[in-house]
Image (cartoon, rainbow, N blue to C red; front, side, top):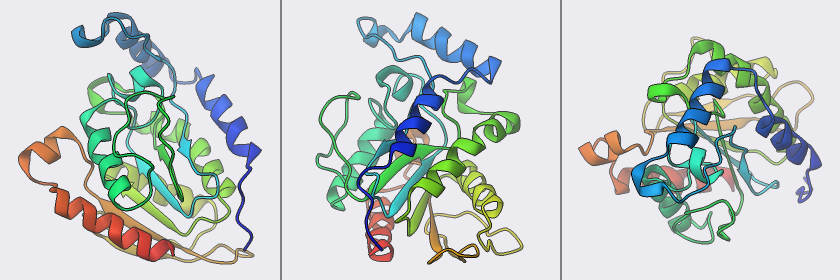
Length: 238
């Protein structure tokens, strides 16, 4: 299959995401966080809007997170950028050969992804990092359109159970042969998803614990565990 290097649909989608005002609770919260700021970031101009996706439009790997961090992506304007979760993620992606540098501090800092695209189940920072089911469902069409636009997609990594459930719903909606009963999330869980009618191939879904401070500080997720996921993902994606 010919690799796509120019996918204007993704640019249009990101523009729609950034302009979205559909969830009043999230609009109010993301803007409140941007106004009040964290003491260590008082000089920063917070993004304070829905956060667009980011990466290589010819990606064979899709990475799905939960939602933007209050003082990470909601501040910097790029997924998994400017907080401890991002330090873990981009460090691992760099070690796996999927990122041009091991850290990311701002949306225009020069970091590029290779063969990977990063998105989230919900595009606005939620209070207490807990989106509602309705907010997840409102964002679901954005995620579905990304899956459709990434024509070379072969592997999906779910960072956490919330993202796992969200991407499985999207794949089922798009006609992929999602196993029943619903596959259970777990770190290192791997599921083969059959292709929809007329599609050239299916996907492999791989689960990973989210690189949140709660998981990394407690040792629930170690560097070795995280690196093993990306080693497997690269192998699967080819």
